[in-house]
Image: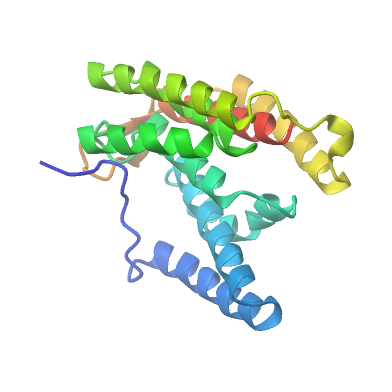
Length: 234
C-alpha cells in the first residue's frame, strides 16, 4: 500500500527532468550570488513549480515542459508571490488530472486538510484552499475524498474568518501594473481553456501505467488552476 499518491518522480537522470534540475540549479546559484540565499531559494522554487504545474496541465508535451522554467516569471510578477500557494496549485492540478494513477490516500487527505488550513491564513492561499476543497469533494472514487473535501472547505472558511483573509481582500487599484498584466493574461487563459476541447483519452499515461490520462480531467485541472490564479490576484 502506498503512503502517498501525490508524489511524482523527479529523477535527474531522465532527459526531461535533467533540464529542469539544471534550470533550477542555475537560478538558485545565480540569484543567491546576486541577491542572497532567501532570494535564491524563492527563485529556484518558482522555476521548479512552473515546470511541475506545466507537466500536469500539458502531459506528454516535452516542449511545454522544457519552456516551463522560463514561465517562472509569471509566478514572480507580484514581488510577494506566495510559493506555498503555488505548491497548493500544483496539488490541485495533480489531484484533478490524477497523473499519479491513484486517488489520494488516507494520509494524503489528512495532509491536504491541514494544508487547506495553512493556505487559508494567506490572502493568496485562501482561494487555492477553496478550489482544493472543491476538487477533493468532486473527486470520485473514493467517498473519503468527498468527506475530506468538505472538511477542507469548513476548515478553510473557519481559519479564513479567524485570520481575516475572508474579508481582507485587496482592491483592484492596489495591484501593481505587473500584477494587472498577469490578471489579464490569466483571464484570457481561463476563457481559452474553458472552450478548448480535448480528446477523451490523451497519449500520455499516468505514472502507474494503468491507462491514458482523461481529457476531461486535464481540462478540469486547467480551469481549476486558472480559477486559483484569477481569485488569488483578482
